[in-house]
Amino acid sequence: MTSVAGRVRRFGPLVSRIAAALFGGYALAALASVAVLALPMSAPQAVLTGEMASFLVYAAAVIWVFAVRSALRAWAGLLVVAAPLLLASWSVW
Picture 1 (cartoon, rainbow, N blue to C red):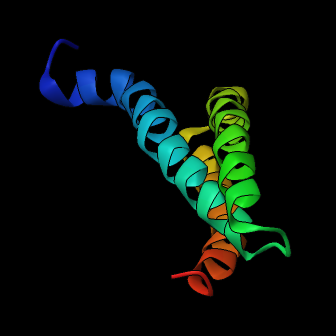
Picture 2: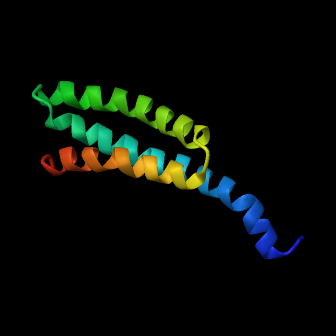
Picture 3: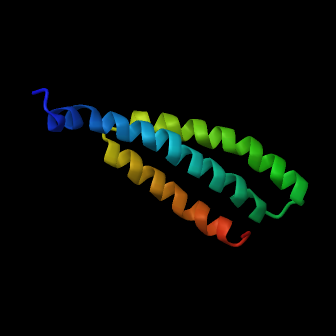
């Protein structure tokens, strides 16, 4: 089973999780850092809070992606968390 389909079936979920951790985690961290600007605090304090929170969000997203049972659940979890962050960020943009 060294065909291309066999390799995709074998390594596809791992590659998908790595992509979810890299790109999905980055997207969540960016959305979280912008969503903090919607909170009722001064702009400089919100920027610093968002910057510090983005590190925690990114680390949590990477842990989440590799902790769930399947790559599909990893992507679904990232999308579920991204939806409210996008709504909160929308008011700032």
